[in-house]
Length: 482
Image (cartoon, rainbow, N blue to C red; front, side, top):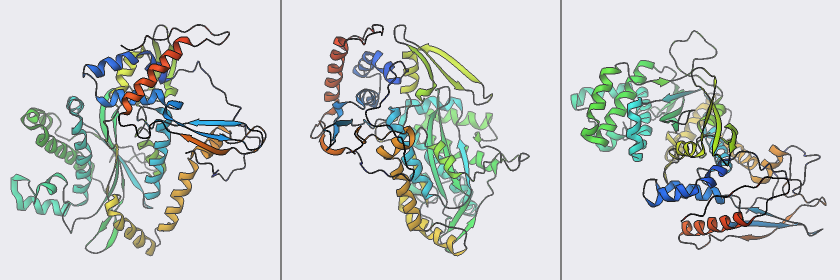
């Protein structure tokens, strides 16, 4: 149900009513490409050449913001005017739903971060490794674990050297859990914090899985019950540890198939895998290649940008010819920062985009150390210790209040008022629409894929018989799926 409260601190004078809505049908949209090639998605799903999540997300995106997913009805008690708000699809391939999901993740992460500078580190893998992760999607979890182990080893060098002397060349520690997640059950291990997000694409939409990590320059000592700053990240050690951890985990996962990849990596990349980080703005002569960021909110927003959205924003689509299926889009080259224009068919663009749809249940954002929910008591203790030394200004109640206020600001009515200067619940007579009813066709439905397919078939039939508006050219709708 739509939240009818208006959580805003700004008075909206001259705000437009819900009847003053403008829509540009000629604006190129991802949905147009999906409608054009929906038959191809159905055929690929039938033959087993596409993952199940692809067709599911495509169907949800096509039905997003339609009455087929249900709606909430509102009416005016003064003049009888009414308005319905269609339900959203909450798909990971929908640009509209993904924006709000991204903002929600960013707010939760931002209000959780301790009041200390954070390092933004990007862990990358060699190009010849990428195809292995695409063939076996479950192996993407290894990137998170390897990034977590790298930071854990960097912050626990004493335990690493001690265990290396004890275990010798085997490298085994105590048990399988401690081997997979380093020092997980060590009571004397320093506790770090890390927020990690995976991006499986570059700006040119090619398959390039890498990890963005936000690490605070602070660690917690559970033995002494104290916190101390940790701002020395040895870059060479970081690269070599990342290389060793990803190779070790992938060797266990893929077995002998991965042996030649591992051996070649140590021969060709003896300095470790590339770990990218920006230089400090305060010190342009810094050659440690480490990222120092006081703007935690900016880093969090960048990391969460594509956690629940398509790999490309609709604003990057310049034009789309529905008859010839030719689409023009652009991206900014990461190295030269030059704009690159691309012209290709809509199907080729969709093929590049769907490979980045995450599998069902795959978490693209994960929290480690004292940022993990299971370690929430340690995070609160860190804030208490920092408050005693007057280095922290936000207590638990203040942070919780801040989180709730920011979450309210992204609710439907408030965000529409702030972003588009339009009150969706304001009637043209000046009154406020009140809630009347809710329609939810998915309630009690066991197989929603069949329901979605029936809805799409019905939309096709209406599309075929729809009369074109006066002054607009005729548009030939695609054929019904077999």
